Length: 114
Length: 110
Image 1: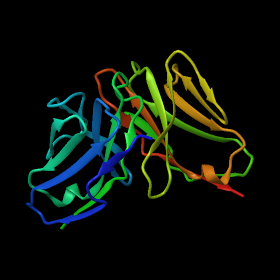
Image 2: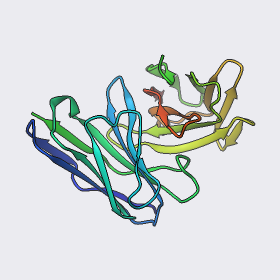
Image 3: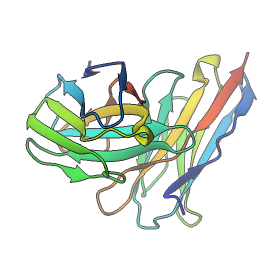
Image 4: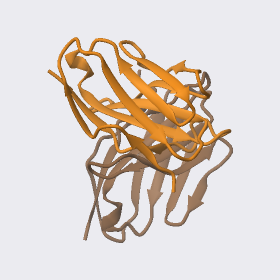
């Protein structure tokens, strides 16, 4: 079974803090994605990566950055957290050659910025 | 205009009935369409995807595409209470992006 894990299930941070959200997959997937999910707005793509050290902007990259130093790990970074970044953050991965097609999601991190 | 739009519902159907879920998309060049299911408090999981060249059936699920009207539908036959969830439509338009709709909540009443 594909397993995508995220470092925290719940996280509370203060405005202005630097926040790291970690995602790890154990199936040697090439592609990894970060989304946020908000009521009424649905899932929105923040960043994705097709390979180590590569990154592509999604629909809403502003205020976020990412890092992919190893194939299995994809980190989302909030340089200076703001209250409008309070959300559920979901990581996903997909096998080589499938792009967006076969995404497997992690359990999510509910981030609250106070 | 949103890339993908869905009626948020809720949609209620009796057990054994056909549930019909729809979404519309804005980019006429889109060629790949996806349906995800998300149970309350859980992550989305892929049910099925279709290409612009045809409909697809997988067990009790059928995905249909109407390119002229730019909408995608998901039919669930013989609906079961375990099908109660939020169904997310997603589209992969040209330009290497991926857009989800806001989801339709389905309740199957025993």
